[in-house]
Image (tube, rainbow, N blue to C red; front, top):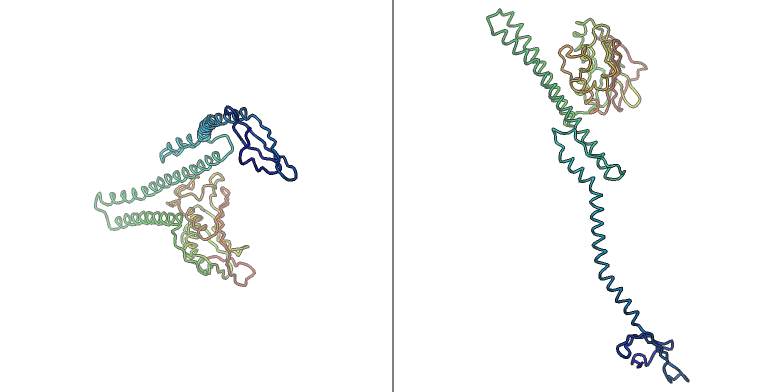
Length: 374
């Protein structure tokens, strides 16, 4: 084997080079210098045939050139199949979601059995649909009930007008007809006013004027307003309150709540009393309106604060009321940062409890002073 120029000065440990031998035979040549007195006197070479190695490397290169593209194609196909399999629940969910509309809110997305993110997404979407369906149901029921409530007084007004116009009548008869028309018109006015207020409260657009309010005079004013109505039914309307009790609240909203609760109590109480009490409670103030009326069945209590809800027929359309007072009171209580609760027993009576938040100032009085409002 010829000694290549770069092998003429190999390091003491030798040098390995690839060379081509006779007939183009590939060799791996190891050249080791022979030294005598630190002088190179010759070279020792050992050669190994690299043909098998080259063939092996060529085979590996061919395998890589063919195998890598095949592996990439195969892995791509497998990934595509796996992705389709993984996305199949999402595809079904997409088709189901496309079928959902305002007229078909009962449709729900299929929920995969696997406890993964797709299942969580389907459950969350279905829960959102449940809330939307409930909201649409409430809206449709509200619209239907409001239409019914408006139709009743409008029909009465038209009937009275036709009755007054069908022939000449005395002045007293016309006054009676106009009085009934005015009463029904005022009923419509109350209904529309409460509907607008309820809509503003639910949408968060109800204006509040929070200030220090001594609620005792406020309560007495509201109770005085209802004394004639209570007396006409032979009811006792009482108040128990400290001499003064100042809280931070919106006076108009609190007044509206008390009006609705007292109106409800007097309407559904035929004998006995309606009692309003107010006390300083832990972390706030508590107002209670208790009556000895017909009471509310247990199955109706969860829905008593829904607009127009009247589960018990004995409470339906009592006194021409429009069924929005309790719903409005409940929303206003939440708007004031408090809560309105109800407890009732049929044929015994009903108690509404309004809890308002802190920031109260109570006059130094050890007890509330019960008194009859005249």
